[in-house]
Image (cartoon, rainbow, N blue to C red; front, side, top):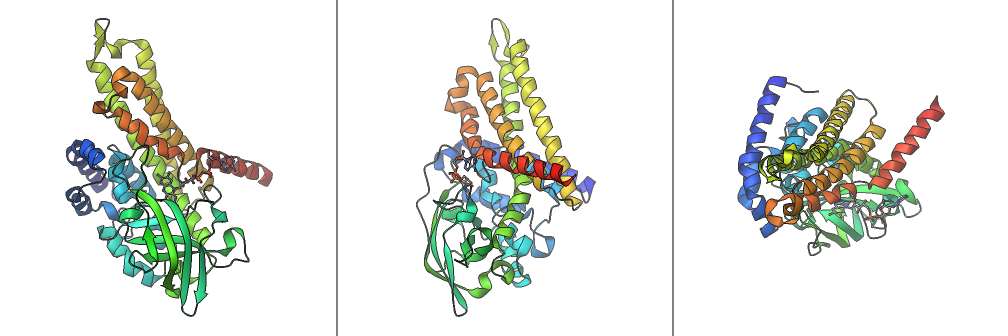
Length: 385
Ligand SMILES: Cc1cc2nc3c(=O)[nH]c(=O)nc-3n(C[C@H](O)[C@H](O)[C@H](O)COP(=O)(O)OP(=O)(O)OC[C@H]3O[C@@H](n4cnc5c(N)ncnc54)[C@H](O)[C@@H]3O)c2cc1C
């Protein structure tokens, strides 16, 4: 659902200009510095980018799912690092509060997240609990009107720069699996919370990721998101369900950009006395990219609209994430091919995208986990008939 089509179209136009004029020219610098410079962060905050999905009453833009995916497809047509900088605040780093926070928790933190004054992080994964997140071992033990957290989270996006962590921890050791898990909101300056050195990664330079350690970290009992024990995994699934549609859009933007760059390249470069674009085998690669991008876009928009109508899109969200992330990988591979040897050389930027987008098939549910989920729900639908 688009609330005001006319003003949303002009919003998208100005976002497109911002991405082309302000972000794309800084891509190489961000990769070299391995961070998004403060002036860029400030400009993104001034554009309201940290608050896309945060309700208006808390200072955000309160986008519908359809608006959010359309904005995401524009914003992500530049190095992944830019949108990853704001992406936890518009996704997994705020969504648990938006979905299930108490009015006090929302009022306290969401305005800061919407303005980008706090960066949020979502800490679910652990060394022994990746795809099987319900196996998490971080504990939160009640002690009077506090909980004491102990454990280690790994692979947490924006942890090195985050001011606020959504943390999944086990409050009931007697309940294995999902039902013993609660979600906590933990400010960075809480004694006992520390973050590790940022990992050296395959790509996405400028998007810091690290471990988060809890060593007798005491938080007030009021830090439980929603105020109730045992609801944490349900909250995490709500967050991830919406985020899968959002992430699918964030996989589609880079695919659009890579194809755009590749089309420009094959139009300009000549071999055998003619532009590469005139060779039919080159055209086939371009057509395959364009076809898959269109399919992803249509799938994502359809799912976003259904979610805005209040339909259960759990399976469709998985399909979006699975298809769009795999599609983006195939597009990246073809675009490197279209660039020939230049595709392998850093100066042309396409190899950076190729490395950056590899992560999409791994996080927020690997492709295999989404295949399992889609199959499970397909069989369940059939059994229900
Ligand atoms: C850069 C980066 C950023 C991340 N950001 C965050 C973050 O902000 N917050 C957060 O909580 N997590 C984050 N993650 C963690 C990410 O979500 C996990 O890495 C992912 O869920 C996979 O878990 P794992 O790495 O332990 O792999 P594993 O679960 O060990 O999987 C390894 C392989 O086995 C396959 N596999 C596992 N189980 C099955 C099965 N049942 N059937 C078939 N195949 C299976 C997987 O598909 C994969 O191919 C991030 C990861 C990275 C690398």
